[in-house]
Every structure is written in structure tokens, then in C-alpha cells.
Amino acid sequence: MNRSFFRWFLMVVCGGALAAISGLAQDGGRTPVDLAGLKASFEGALAKLDERYVQLDQSYLQALARLLEAETQAANLEAAVMVKKEAEAFTASAGKFKEAVFRRNLSKYEPLNRLQTKYLEARSALTRELERPKSELVRRYDQELDKLQVGLTQAGNLPEALAVREERQRLIDAPPFGQPPPASFSGKAKFVTKGEVEVFINGDPLSYRDLYEGREEDLRVTAESRPEDFKVGDILVVRSRSRTTFRGVIIALEALDGSVYVPIRLTHLSRLRDEANPKQVTTEMIASAKSEPTKGATDGEMLAAWASFGLPAADKGGSEWFQPDQANVWNTWATVITDEMILPWKVPAEK
Picture 1: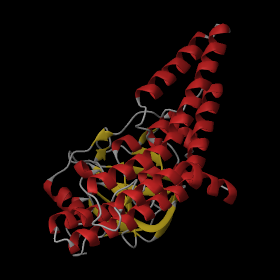
Picture 2: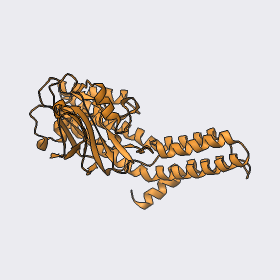
Picture 3: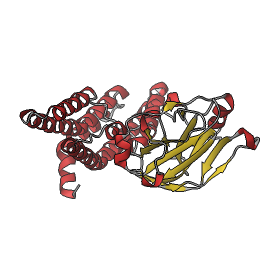
Picture 4: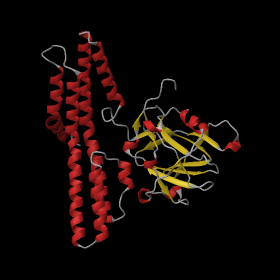
């Protein structure tokens, strides 16, 4: 986004909202008003910025409507049905966009695929455009929260001051209020299974250190890879084989500084052909393989091994267990790392 557009954007789109936040927090030099009012102004300003996404979504639906009309007039029944289903699915998920799910459902029909790809490109560009205005909004909001916290503390209203401090911490901890995760980071892959496992990034196998100290015949793997550079758009491939009943696999990527991590969940993964060559896996191949992996079976030792890494549990948004469909058969899964998969993370103090 060029500088002139950024200045216009801040003045026209953000200006009123930022002024409202600044004005709300101060009342003629007296003690600032309550947190609820200040927070409401911030969330309203954020919603105003996000209206751009609503406009983009409407443009995409209009493009789908035009394509549907063209396919209908041309009596292309199958194509018309595909376009109609895409429009219905997109409408049903309004406000809940998930890039990984959208990419998984990219159509093989070229005219529809072209619209879907253009939408992804436009959404990515819009996200980059909004980074600076959103960062400025967060900065101003934090400034006013700081003033509010000071005023409440000086007035002896300690419970409210503590609530304001918690809100300031939320700015750091929780997207979309905190700074957006980086598009790349240096980190390690961490994974656990009971069997054989291979992990690849863009076709290259990851070297790893097995931390399991039990018997070799147990076939247990508790591993972390050597440091690697990961980025949005990387293709992660996992292959596994096990002869046991409890043959679950779980994997995540974690930044070396603990700032972010990438949990790998069932909805992220596509099951590829068992004979798929990791060096030849493409984004198109992943998108066309729509089947998710089977939920993984585990035993207590596997759960304890994964817990030892200190990453969030599945019910907290962390990685999920998956497994080969049959014992003693290699299965292959893959995913493309997206922006939304890279989540903020803080290393616990005990680590």
C-alpha cells in the first residue's frame, strides 16, 4: 500500500474511530471513563476496518453469480451445480473464513478455480494493506488503556485497574488484537508416534533427534527436528507406518523463540495416495485430495510424551492425533502452511 493511500485510509477510515477512542478515555482531565466504553469504541473501529473483507466477499459472490448465469445459459449443468454449491457454501461460512478449508475445496473446474484463486490473492493483499492501520489502532488503544489504568489506580479503583491491565495483556496475547504472526520463522518440528514416521518440507526430509529412551523394539518416536526455516506456502508432508493398534501420529511446528507455533489438525491435512512421492507433492495435489485423515488412537505413554513438549492441547486449539487407516501400511498426508495456521505462542516459564 503506497504512503498516500495509507494516509487517506487512516484519515477517512480510521480517523473518526481513533478520535473516538482518544476522546472517550478522557473527560476534561478527570478520571477516565470505564473500560467497557473504551473497549466498545475499539471494537467498533476494528469492525469498521474489517468492512473491507465484507466488501471483498460481496464482490466474490457477485462474480460467482455472473459465472453461474453464464454456465446456466450455456446449459453446462455440472459446472452450474459446482458454482451454485460454491456460492452456497461461501455464504453459509460468512464471517468464518478459514484459508486452509478454502484451499482444500479449490475446484478442478478451471473457470471456478480461477475465481477462487483471485479471491485468495485479493484477500491476502487486503490483509497486508490492513496490517498498518490495525497496528496503529492497537497502538492508540493501548495508549488510552494505559491512561485509564493510571487514572483508575490513582482514584483507588484497583479492581477496575486490574481489569484494564488484563485487557492490555489481551492485546499482546490474542489475535486479531495483537500483532499478526510472521509469515516465516525459524523453528523445529515436534512429533510423537508409535511406529515409523517421515516428515518432509517442500520435498526435503527433516532430520530429527529421537528423545525416546525406552526399548528400540517398542517403536516409539518422541522427536524434534533440527532447526529449520518455515514459511507460509511451505508444503508439509507426513508419512507413517505402524503395526500396532495405537498408531496415532501428532505433529506441530514451534518457533525457536517460542513466539509462534503451528498446530497440525485433522482439517489441515489431506490424505494422499500411499505411493505419493513427497518430492512431487503440489498444492494442486493437496487441494484435490479432499479426504481428511483418520483420528488417531493413543496410549498413555504417547499422550505423556506429547504433553512433555508443553504445547497447547487439542481442545485449546493445539494439534490433533491422526493415524494410518491400516496396520503396517504406509500412509501419506500433506498440508500447505497458511497465515491462519501460524498462531501466537509463549513458552511457559518452566521451559
